[in-house]
Length: 167
Image 1: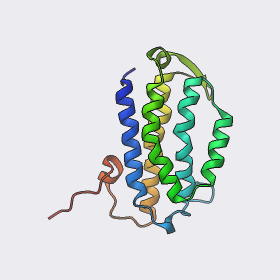
Image 2: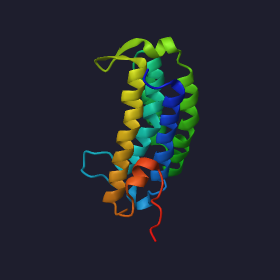
Image 3: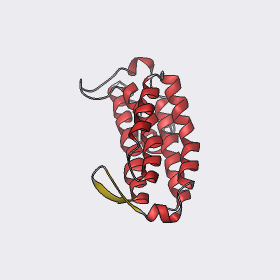
Image 4: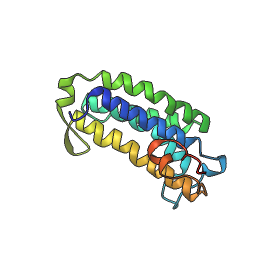
């Protein structure tokens, strides 16, 4: 593993921190925004993020996609309002600490096949969960910019903070 478990947990928790920062920039009128009719709306994207990691991590541990857990998580997410989505996302920081610590070193080095591809579990956690967070937070950032949040910049996307005021 290129990252230790603690480093992976830290990276995932940082993704949640940045995502929550971006959520603080969402205005109610932005929740229905979608770039094209077939793309997710802002709210649909955020609901998806409440399910992605919490189902992928146990699926990776189990060695197969947990479809029943996915369907139940998706149904629960569909019932959430924006405040509920944010609370669900907030809970993921503790979830990642517990779930990643639940993998043994041997499990992380174990090979599984999921979605038609063979992976080491540790590599799949990085390529699907960690990278998924980075990709989807970037999508959220682009949605926010498209909705007129012109003040958002690099610091918001990559550091989860507003840029320091210039003198």
